[in-house]
Image (cartoon, helix red, strand yellow):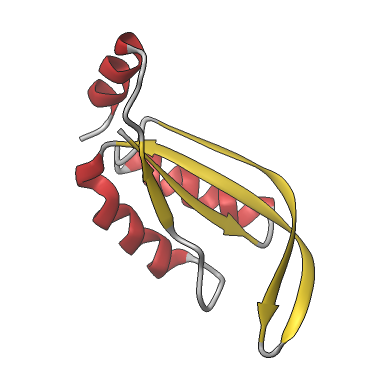
Length: 101
């Protein structure tokens, strides 16, 4: 199991991408919530409200998910990275694998 993380400028763009990933059965579940962000952009520090998203999936789907994010994301350079999860409750992992292709 892996968790893929990204952020969005608003809830609408997060929901749109979540729906696309789920329809393609590349993830079993996605969570997104509002966050406050500060970051360097074009030589100055920006402060903004964003929506963070975690995508729960299997390792083999990372490249497809990354491609979908890049092709559909409103940001010029979206944050896209993953964590390998080494401990997962067995029934949850079974469900995750059943719900992803």
